[in-house]
Amino acid sequence: MSIDCKSIGSSSLLFIIALVLWLCPSTLLADYRISGTINTKGAWQAQVFLSTIDRLDDYYNAKAEFIINVTSIDEEGSFVLEGDNLPEQAQFYKLYVLKESHSEFNACLYMQGEERNFIHLLLDNKSKVQLTADTTGYAPFGNYSITGNLANEQMTQLNHLLHPSQLFYEIKFPAELKYSQDKLSRDLFQFADTCSNTLVALAAINNTDYHLYFDTQYDLYQKIAQRMKLEWSDHPYTQNYIRKLRYYNEQEGRDYSLIFLVMTCMFAFLSAYLLFQNRQLKQQKNTPILPTPPAPKLDQLTPQEQKILHFIKAGKSNKEIAGELFIELSTVKSHINKLYAKIKVKSRKEAILLAKSQEIEGV
Image (tube, one colour):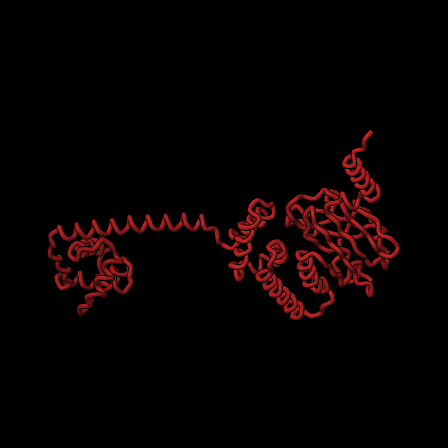
């Protein structure tokens, strides 16, 4: 009876693999892994939550339906959060802890200093992140650091850049507050422009005030859009961001489709106007020039009519003219009709203008 050594070797290898998987299944089967330490000083629960950010507008929202994983924190503040339920493409996530008085259904993100209880991460289903919190303060994450993951090292830089902005409430003077906010905005624009990771650059630009800076930083906003279209054309964030830019385009009067329509209408109107003018010029060339009729002469009026025109020019009414000349009102009207016919005017106003233009003696 012979023994098949190859069969024994294969069986042994399969047995060893099965034994390893049985002893440490979570480590080998997990696709993403976030581990490290959290500062648990203060009234914080011994749990850490991971929640998804499916839309850019939810970057600072905390809701129970966003939570995708949770794990315990031991007495030393250590935790391991792992699984295989993340999408294959990278996106933003929040890692946060809750106060003792809260639950996942009334989660609250605290911005201020030592209350700050969250950080943002950029993860896909293969991400490995090692996090170390600063234990010298009371904030759960504090001046934390991440090693071994370039994308999240850049996210850490961005989070530390944004962190001073959460201390604006301590600033007492309006001018100081404005200068601090302006400086943060300049730093965010520079970070977004120079960051090698497009999604991290998007996170930076998404933290700026579109309403205040969209017009002055328009080229940079568009540059990030082009990077997203090139590298992440089918990512939901790309559509979110393009939609937001389109909204601010319209708010700032940059609706180029409307501008194009207006310019097209103006061009059509100008073309029609020029065509009309061209036709008018041709008609004028073909029309014989008639002599201009001579202006009416006021010296053709009788002395009485000249007096009446003088009173009309002075602004007197028919009744006042009759009183000045000691004649009947009907006689005045008769004289006025005759002089209107002689000087070819139809109204008192035209008669006054003609009298002033010729300024003959007595009138």
